[in-house]
Image 1 (spheres, rainbow, N blue to C red):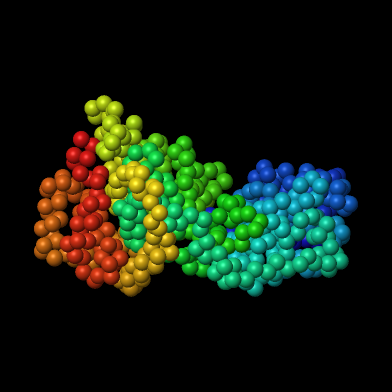
Image 2: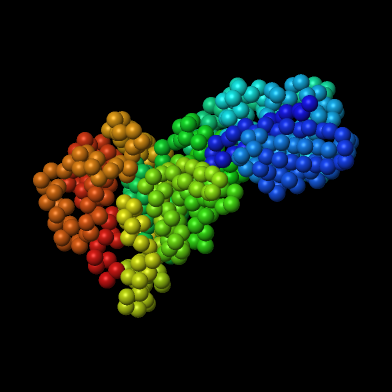
Length: 513
């Protein structure tokens, strides 16, 4: 009779249980694996045979057929080694098979029987709990991330022999137990950086506070060394803390990508991803022959920082446009289609020109006529259209750098951001899927961002005198609504509009001369 063991396959950020049937029959020694396996799964025989013999167990010299069901779903990777090895041990009578149906088993084997870590342990554990599976046996390095799932026994193993002890001698390794809420609250908002470290740059801090309060995308434009990267890295410290649902969702993505260390159980701080400008479009948005989440999904519920924006390939930037709108990315392949969430704040930084000193208060720009405009045109209009705040960064002078005056810490700024977000939560409770001002549709902007006659006159004057483009209109209203929220105001005042207009530098027709 065939012996059944259970593994799991991860597609996107969801998992599906895979039944692995092992049948050993008489005849010439052969090893056949069916059920749409890839090359890594086919090669498992060599690893399993070596692991069994080097661990003191017997590899049957008979015909072994392994079926991986459902057979119409492609099985990929080396994580099924331990599942198949356990099935072979049970089918050959080296361990008892009666309790196998209660456990899901996953792990890659080395030639000496050591169990190596796998990707996607958390979504696999969530699916196992959903299907009322009693326990999950997996590499010890992945045990903590799987153990945050309640009502599931999680056993971390480091060697094949521990599987034999588990099912033959009832000698089980210690249960891995993680108190999810304790883990979550213990490390929440535990950041290394802080806005208190930044001297001067009050205008930039203010713009990032507005961005955090309304979920707005922002671009920082300034000369080298002005502090653009330093300020961007501190943005997650003023965002509202992750809730438990967001923490689990973020951890699932990082688990699938294999980005969690053995000590990590739950991601409790907002991610900050900063890919280099040589990144490919697949690495940024996700995909590949075996689809994996890209940088925009790893930044889910956090910040994606693109430094030196014009240096990115135009095709790379263009593929971000749809995920920025839909807050998820779909990777379609011939056999399957997977969805990855990608709700992130985009913060970009760039020099104003190739030499970096256009509009610098002290140094002279050496770029020729038209060079500045050509440099800025590397970033397309449709992408800039999705960025609400254009912030000019100027260098910090010596007096501010040497000042002993304490800067405002992230904690105080974060409190104001949380209050503004609470106002938005109340405002959008009748709009499912809308959580922040930046996500408002044009129709919602007209209904919610109502301004006085004096405010309309100010907007009209700004559009004419500053040469603002038409696309700036809605952006200014959204940002003004956020500034009003930070001030605790139900109405959008003239002062709120004036500050919002200040943050539309790139829309001015004469900005690049």
